[in-house]
Image 1: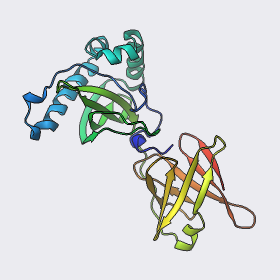
Image 2: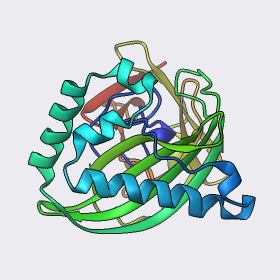
Image 3: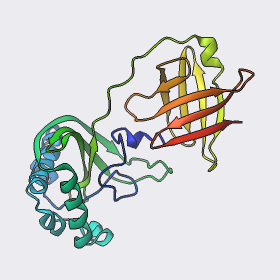
Image 4: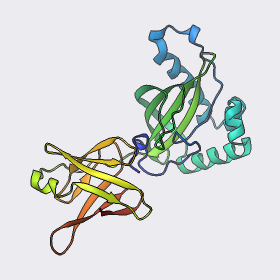
Length: 253
């Protein structure tokens, strides 16, 4: 929960099919390394992504599967892929507008369970409009051993709600929330304080700063997750409720 790779997943993605990405399609659209100077790396991945999205927009799902890598074809049958993409199209309608907002490159990314995925990856984020409204899209590309960039991920999500208004909370109040909390399934997270900044950190994950919307409720920026702290009748903080795809009370240890 509140994993960094969920930073664009404001609810469960419409399509999720791979263990380290929100959703993955490995597509053999060639853009070889010797076709581009190193400074043109962004242009290379953007070109591949645009060509692939053009096929998706045209409902050429079978073509996209036919062009996919052997690895992806082994992971997911053509029938399953077509079925899943048709469900996305039924939910969103046609794409009418797409604006690229960010591109990132990462080497050997790490999954939330600590597994390292070898390779060079590119993440292209879009603000998009479909017939059902505004959403975000994510296209992930991987550089193959022959130098070709291939699309290796796709996710469609709703746009996040606007963040709550941030309010000031005293350090004494923040200090009362510091501690370790455990959910019923055993998953743990820690609340720490550095100066006047409160942080949350799930087991094996990075730290995320928490921002107050009230004295007891906090939100994360870039991740659709909130925390609410609960006191007992004596005023002692006993529980931190994580609101992320549900309500997850963590008892203080």
